[in-house]
Each structure stands twice: as C-alpha cells, then as structure tokens.
Image (cartoon, rainbow, N blue to C red; front, side):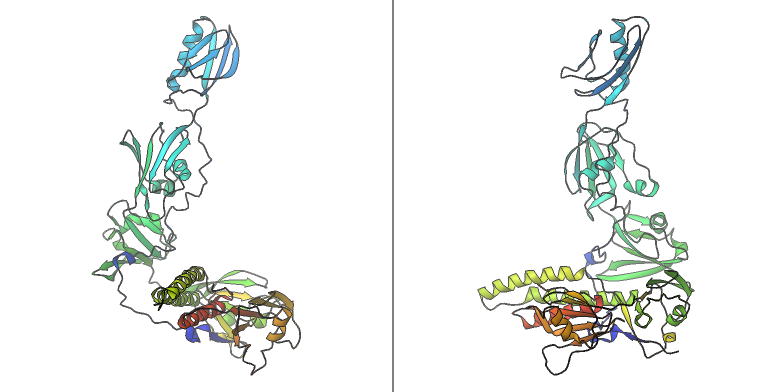
Length: 535
C-alpha cells in the first residue's frame, strides 16, 4: 500500500551543517553553563519565605515584647497572656511584677513560681510558656541575590533565611559550603545536598546577629547522558570518585559505561571507562562526565498526539515502521489521515544548531561592521543593539523537527526512532493567515481561493511585509515559498488546514546583514512555523 513518502527538511540548503571533530576550546568553555540546570536551584523560589517555624526553644533569652501565656490555679486563679514591658517585667494581678528580661526559656516557670509563692505560699499551681517570641535578625551574606539583614525566629531553618535573601546566585554560590558565623567564629557548617537527597534539615538555633555566609562555588562538574539528573553538580572536595556521585545523578537502568571529558593543552580529551571502574576513577572540577550504555536497545518509545482513539504513548520494537503503527491505530471520524505529521528529536536538534550557527555569524557581523563617518557609526550602533535583541529572541525559538511526509510512497520505508512524535491533525475548514498582514485572522476555506485572495481578505499586506517571502504551510507540514511581487505567476491554491505566513521586511544599511536576517526569519518560519519581527 502506497500512502506517503519521506521528504526531510534537511535537504534544504539552509539546513546544511559541517562538523569539526577537532574543535579547540578555551579553558572556560569546557563547561557550557548557558541553559544548564544546577542541582538544587529549584529550592529558592520563595516557598520558604513566609513559613515561620515557631517552636519552643529552652535556650531562648526573653526580650521586651515577648508574650507569656500564664495559668494559675488553686488558692489563687488566673489565666491570661502577659507582655514583657520596656522594664523587662510582667504584671500579675494580686501578685505584682516579675522581672523576666534576659532569662532563658527554661528558667521562666521556676522564676514565676518563686514570685507567686512570695504572695501565695500554699496550694498554688502554675503553668507558663512563651506564647510568642519577638523575631531576631540574621545577616545573610556571600553569594546570594540580595545580601541583607532578615527577621525570623531562632528556630527558623537556614533555608528560610536564604530564601528571604533571594536564594543562591546560580553558578556562583555554593550549596555545599554554607557556614553560620557567631562573633566572627564558625559555629555551624551546612551542606544543602543532604537536604536535597535525604530531606534532612540541619538543626540549629539562631541568635541575634548571626551571619549566614554562602561561600563561592569551587568544584563544579557537568553530568550528561543516561541519568535521571543531568545537571551541573558541585563536588564536596577538589576531586571525588565517580562512585561517590552515583547517588546524586541516578544512572538509568542498563548504564554500563561513562566518559570523562577534560581540557588538555587547550583541547578536549575524552576517556571512556566501564562502570565497574567507578570506584577507582576520579572526577575533578571543570570536567564533564557522560553516562551511557553500549547494550543494543530493543525498543523505541514514541508519542502519538492529536485526533485519534487509543494510547498516547507506545513502546515498539526497534525497526518498526510508521505504517506498522498507523495500521493498528484507531482513528476517529475527525482524523485527517492524509495530513499525518511526524516530528523527530534528532531533526529538531540539527535545526536548532543550524539556527544558532546562523545567529552567531549574524552577531559577529553586526559587531564588526565598519563605518565610514561618525553619523554612520551612530546608526550602526543603534542597529547593532536592535540586532542583538533580535538574536536573543531568536535563540528562544524551538524548531519542531518535522519530517515531511508526502502522498506518493510507502510508509513502510519510514522507520521510527526513539522519541518520535506522531501527530494526527483534526479535519479543519480553516485557513490561518499570520505575519505581516493588516489583520491576521483565521478564515473558513473558500473553494478555488489562492494565497492572494486570503491576504486580501485580511486587509492586504502591511507596510513591513516582505512580499518575496510569503510561505504556504500545507496541512502536512510541506512549505511552499511564493514571491507576491513578481507578477509572473498566479499564487498557489490554498486548501483546508493550510497556513499562510507573511514574513517581515528587514531594513538595514548593510545589505549583508539584511540578507542574513531574512534567511534567519525564513529558517525560523520553516522550522518552527512561527513569524517573528526582526526589529
């Protein structure tokens, strides 16, 4: 049965890529920290800030403003809450004053018993406790986002004070070397990895004026591959065995080897080891470790989305074709079978890398373009600033990695890969028009209408429209480019479920930059099906 054919977007020249196996890096480039997740960074997002831990502390020293809950019964009865006044006293009716300032919490009840028995020596019982402590102030300093003095209770956790200071600075502060200073002496050392892994919060009672110092991050490694925690990790010491980090990174089932990459004389050098050597092989700061398996994987996990009836996740034997999956898939009456789409992670990664390469080249040109006059230099400077903002936005775009399927060939030839996503569109009678038109809109399909007709229904082109770059994205993902200003050919017919993308025009004094930006806008539209403005 012939049904579709495979046509990769990678055949377009804009997706060509050259790999350099002997890339030379600067020393600081081995750990590419941009976009990396640091183990523990999820801790400080404000979840601890307003969660006071009010607990009885026997060593707490009573202060002005503390509230004492007092109950007396027997020969004399009294129940109430009394506040320590500015003289350090509380007043007990029919008893008088009792000075409590500076007493420890454990001394409270004995002191009150002595005061009351001076007036009522016999048959009087008493129960007293601190109902509400006055907050104390703790300094939080070092590698935190907001160094300062923060109020809390003596029984509050170090997590609460750090959270109040905005958390640890990503990539700069240590999660494993936190110290509490009292009168310039270290009274407590804290390793937050203990909390992250075991849920154990260090028990410590703060005093007025204590200092929480977050020390700089020293020993950082990058963990990648078949692990459940592919993050940036901090070593406790200058070197650690691979075995020591295994409880942190949690290798997946089947992992039996690892590769350590480090810099030697300005070049990356990698060494592979079997997992059984984890105890004797050591990691040092700045190195990257990649866990993997050389076992033959027998299955592939795929995702099925869109208009269908049945499972959304399947595990199929390796070598299964797209046809094998679709023939067993229960479709609904609304499934648009002829427009099935396939998205592949490896294609998306190539598209993303190519986009980043283009953006890097654009950035280099924008920052190195010469100017003939001071006036032109001013224009170039403003233009470069706008280009850099455009580059920052473009870097956030995530290509879809779509593999284009046509109607001529057999789906048995398309073998599914791990992580493939099959999308079954819903039958639609809508045409979406977006980008540089007067009124972007979704319009019901009109028989025989072409691109120009739909653009006119949306008020025509905007002033910023690039009429040489009008794209018709078919329902199955295939892209047709149309030059609306050529006047030589009629525009393509539009069918139900299609989309029309009108790219924006780029105005620059530098023709080379204009060409580069136009290509990038086209690449984003094709790879991610979105239209963004350059400036």
